[in-house]
Image 1 (cartoon, one colour):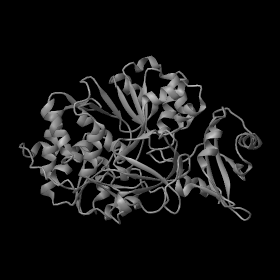
Image 2 (image 1 turned 135 degrees about the vertical axis):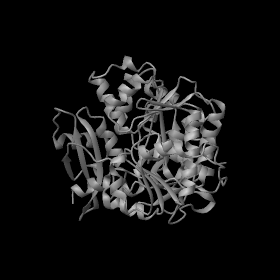
Image 3 (image 1 turned 30 degrees about the horizontal axis):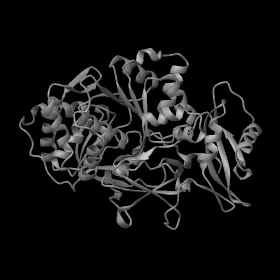
Image 4 (image 1 turned 90 degrees about the vertical axis):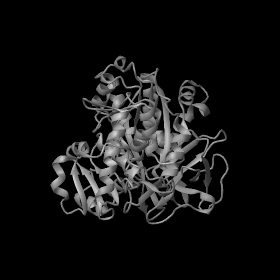
Length: 497
């Protein structure tokens, strides 16, 4: 099965239903499918080997995604926030390419091998293409999407997602035509992130209207939710924090979010106080924590709405702690925790997370990262409790090894998030002559708050062992994150060098 069939099925089942809203323009499912067919003719005729969008969210994104699939050409969205040199290096790896960019930047890509079109020019050009359906290229094992990893460390790798992986994820997690006609999902995550791509595919298959927010701003997000009567949304933790801040400061009334019924979040660790504030402020909204990776075609575990509310309202600390988990594995997914030697660990023992299932690619253009029996080592660290809930403790590479003892940054950060004066915090490893590695803290205080270093150390000392005390603390205005909400620990480490 080819992922373009998701849109074909939706267009045949509900042709007049609105599929996409961008600013003041609306596209029905029939119109979106027609545009994708015409784009497929154009891509196929161009002779390009890749289709790429280097731009914010627009109708060109879902059209190009589906049209590239029809034509059997890998779709490669690029991060428009990268530097000129970084973009050049990535573009060199996907030539010849059919590249769609912001109309004001087309002159910047004259040297790219292939065809470059501005977004508006591309959309306008579709009217001249044949109106008949394009003969879809059927190859389940063909590469549907090539995503360059975020590059939080080292040179970005090219992760390959084949049609069979993406189809497995969608069919296993979304009901066809499962959305009512009035439902709408607000897509505000970047179009080059797997969460943005999966939001488009899952919404199309459910026949749910997609509302695009090209650039995230908390007040814009809230206003668009109200204006378009949004029912569903996906956000990363940094977005959730800013949205909740606006609501708490009464800059926007939660009464205007009456249509909003469900918010999913993921892409990074959600601070416990933030989700607790969200549950308190939006009692009628169902929250879902989704954990996944590019290499797994998006979500592999879910902490569902019932889990959220039960944990939030429970007096048992063991159950309440589940708010800090990413939930349980999807039915088609297997998860194991292994030690450094690859041995499977028991419940509540921390190690590296391994996943396996039909949606798991684990494949890069450079190499296949799958090991024996199809297991993928995620490089994420965590543990599974006796009830099957997965808890993350950061990247395996982020573990601080102090005097031979492995220390998870998350255990320190979770303690500090509980302090009313702390807005954000990160623990990283720094070199130490005595211990090999020591702990450094970067702390962001809430506006107007004051907190001494000794107060921070006292709080940690009262909750954790003395080995968790930081050697150095730095107060900062904000911490660095990428657009997908991932904390850039390598940048923070450089602050202490």
